[in-house]
Length: 636
Ligand code: ADP
Image 1 (spheres, protein in one colour):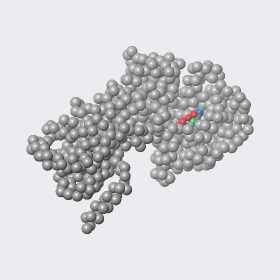
Image 2 (cartoon, rainbow, N blue to C red):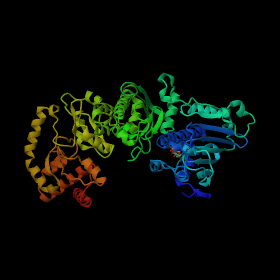
Image 3 (tube, rainbow, N blue to C red):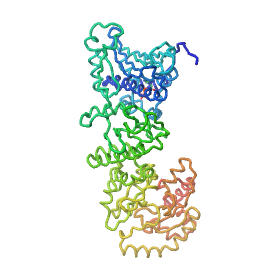
Image 4 (cartoon, protein in one colour):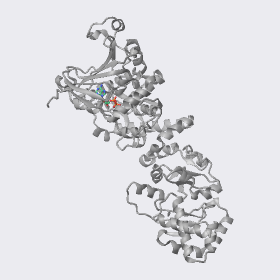
C-alpha cells in the first residue's frame, strides 16, 4: 500500500455545510451534548475493534484494555477526547467525517423548509454526531490510526467547520482516535474539568468503558505535560446498564442510554427491560422512539438492535432479532448462549436467536398493548409515527396476528376524523344488531375515502365504516381478513348484502324497482359495452346517481391504481356499474326517448362514478365535450 503523505484540502459535501449551520443554530441552548456525542463515537469505536479483534487478534496490538480519556488544557484552550478503538484509515476519514453516509440523509434534506426555526427540531430526529464538536469549537483537529495499520498510516484531519477540511498523513504510534476541540471564545465553561465531569455523569455514565479524567487536585493545578496513567481516574460508572437491576436504574439513565444506542437526540417514548432466565438466558433493553427516523421507509434502512454476547458487543443492525414491522424498535439484546465469534450467517439458523426473537416480539407487542390501555394519548402519538409500519405486521408475522390486530387503529365514519384512533374492539362494540361484517372503504386519500359515494347507505343506516387511505392498508387487508369472527368486508366490492340490517319491506321495494328498470339496465349495458362487466340497480346510494363496484374476487380499484403507479402490470378487471333508480338524473334518463342522448348521458354517469372514486378517465377530452353539450342543452 502506498502512503499519501501529502497534505490536501478538501471541500465538505454541500449537505455537511448545511447541517453544520443548522446545528449550531438549533443547539445553542444545549451545547453540552457535544461531549456525549464524541464519547458515544469513541465507545462505538472500541466496540467495533473488540468485535473485529475476535477474528484477528493482531488488531489489538497487545492492548485490549479499552478506555476513553477526556483531557483539558486551559493554556491551549483545548479539550481532547481520546480513544483506543478501531480508528480510521485515510479513506475512512474522508468517507465518515467529510460526508454524511447515513441512510435517510436524502429524506432529511428534502424535509428541510429553509426556515431555521422550523427546521431546528428536525436536527434532533436526524442525529448530530461528530459535527456537534463545532458547537463549542471553532477548530477541530482529529488524529487517528486504524488498528492493524503501521504507525506511518496515521491521519490528521482539521477543520474550522466553514466548508473545508485539510487532511494529512502523519506518524501515530497509538491506534485509535483523538479529537482536539479548540474551544470558542466565550465557551470557557467547557474548559472546567468539574463541568465536564458533570456532563459525563449526566449523559455518559452508562458507557461501558472507563472514561478517564485527570484527578481533580492535579488537574486543577499547574500540570506537567503528559501526566502518567496513575494521575487519571475513572469518572463514570463503566458497567453495562442493562446488567444492573431495574430498580436501580433511573429514568434519566434509561433515557441517556437510549440516546447513545439509537443515536437519537430526543427522549424515547417507552422502554422495556427484561432479564430472562431459563433454557436460554438473555437480557433485552428495548425502546420505542418518540418519532419515526427519516429512513423508516428506506428499503435498506437499518434495524435498531445491537447484539451483545455476555456484555461483549457483537454487531449493530441485527435484523434477525426483530421482524420488519418492528424495525423502529431500538436497543440491545445480550445473550449468554451464543458463541463470541457468532456471524450473521450463524444467526440465521440459531435456536437461541429464534427463541430470543420470539420472546422479544411478544414483549414489544404487550408493551404497546399496555400503553394503548393505560395512556391513550401516548398511544395515539405512537400510532401516528409507526402505525403504518405495524400494519405490515399481519402479513409478516402470522403467529402474532391476533395481538397485532388489537394494536390497529383506524379512522372511521363514526367521527370522520383523520386521526386514526378507533380500535377494532371499539368498532365491534358499536356494531348494529344484525350487522355481521366489519365494513371498510379504501381510497387514495382520506377525503376520497370519507366522501366516497359508497358510504351513503351506511351513513343513512348509521353503520360505521373504516376509512382506509394508507397505501399499506391494501397490503394489510390481503392478509388480515377477520377480527373476532367478524369478517372484514369492502363496501365497494361484490353485491351489497346488508342481511338483517335491511327489513322485508325494503327488500320487496327493491325487487319491484328491479322489474321496473329491466329495460333501462339493458339499454345501459349496450351503451357502456366493454367498459363494464355488468350493470345493475344499486342499494348503496342515497344521493349520488351511480357508482362503480368491483367483483367479489377482483382486485380493488384502489389497489389496481397503486400497483399501476408503481409500474406494475395489472390484469385490469372491469367494474360493475350500479345506478340509483331514485336519482333525478336517472329518472330523467328513464324517460329519454332519444337513443343517442340516452347513451351520452349514461356514459357521463359512468365517467362521473369513476372520477368520484378517484379513478382516471381513459378519455377526459370526450368527457368534457359531453358535459359541455349537456350544459348547453340545459341552457336552451
Ligand atoms: P454516527 O456516529 O451517527 O454514525 P457521526 O457523525 O458521529 O455519525 O460519525 C460518523 C462516522 O465517523 C461514524 O459512524 C464512524 O464510522 C466514524 N467515527 C466517528 N468518530 C469516530 C471515532 N472516535 N473512532 C472511529 N470512527 C469514528
